[in-house]
Image 1 (cartoon, helix red, strand yellow):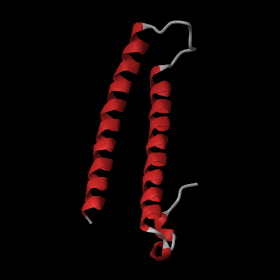
Image 2 (cartoon, helix red, strand yellow):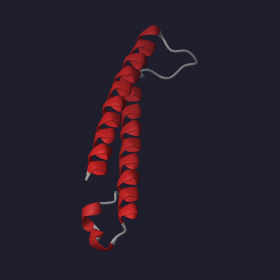
Image 3 (cartoon, helix red, strand yellow):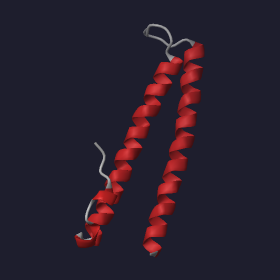
Image 4 (cartoon, one colour):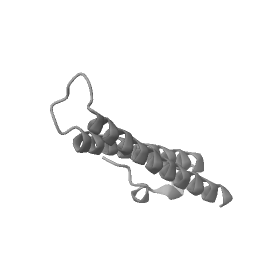
Length: 90
């Protein structure tokens, strides 16, 4: 269940509490994205029964998937930083 801040009566809510809730919602969304991407990489790269050692194809797939994950994480983090800066200016 996600918190929809638009549904809350924000007029009577303390600004610090509003900011805290926004940040916590963003953190939760980011964590959901991490879990989703981990599942995608696992399903995409591990097509056979897991063994004690990865073959080179599977290892390469995981490395590429992790690289894309890092790229995505950086993009999301940069976007959050932009939003925070924008909120600070208001």
